[in-house]
Image 1 (cartoon, rainbow, N blue to C red):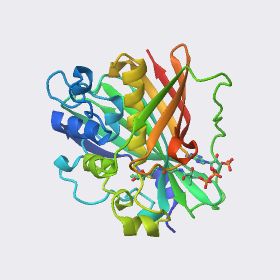
Image 2 (cartoon, helix red, strand yellow; image 1 turned 45 degrees about the vertical axis):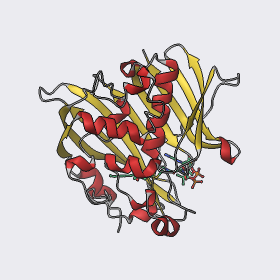
Image 3 (cartoon, rainbow, N blue to C red; image 1 turned 180 degrees about the horizontal axis):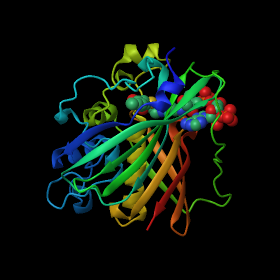
Length: 289
Ligand SMILES: CCCCCCC[C@@H](O)CC(=O)SCCNC(=O)CCNC(=O)[C@H](O)C(C)(C)COP(=O)(O)OP(=O)(O)OC[C@H]1O[C@@H](n2cnc3c(N)ncnc32)[C@H](O)[C@@H]1OP(=O)(O)O
């Protein structure tokens, strides 16, 4: 059986040591499209060692980049889980920051399957991770929701019913983030070498017209747009960010993010204007300070 729910839930956490340098951070930001306006000093702060800032969403790739030695696609190598990469999509993501991420550093990251939801036509595997620094101080915690097509129907719970509602009033701000046709090819060097994002033949067999952008690239692009556009360029003002990946984005398309502000809570909706405003990120909430 591709998912043995009991084995997945009973397994001990897997632990890995993550090390990253300023180059990993810069490459990650370039993969999100940073630096296009390289004469703008604020933009340079994402892509140049001097006064380098670190987007909090870097947490999702810390220690995984090609410079860390990754040469093969990350598979679903989780205890009790054996699924072909063609059947999985990134379904949702949340991240909470407990301390600023340094431009170079190390962390110990523990991962475990916290839940498996049964959506009938699919299973959603909930993978929780937590990172601590060398003194054991918490750095971040995150939860990935992995959509596994054809793996549902095992009689499990459906998971929480989460509202995707956005306020009825007009958005307080709309942020526009164009992507380039090469975007996924750069982003993948930060560690997710899934061929779905590079190989046209693989993408076709997975049911897409062509390679799609990584969900975590859209996640980082929207995070950067909010930090640049609403948080004075200060990444440490983001406390948490959760989204559902509701639709795929093709490299070269635009992310248009509507933002509603309610105190320190931002509600976001990212859509693709080239495809009649089709949703890309829904259920999106960012807590800021
Ligand atoms: C360890 C390493 C792991 C690495 C993993 C990641 C590797 C990456 O390289 C992969 C990627 O980056 S893929 C790119 C990003 N993701 C995507 O493009 C997916 C976009 N989303 C979709 O296509 C659909 O929403 C889709 C297909 C997800 C769902 O659409 P539908 O089939 O139409 O389902 P729908 O009718 O909308 O919903 C059915 C029930 O499921 C619930 N649901 C939907 N999305 C969910 C999600 N993300 N999380 C939890 N629940 C979700 C719905 O609420 C509904 O539930 P219920 O029946 O209980 O009401």
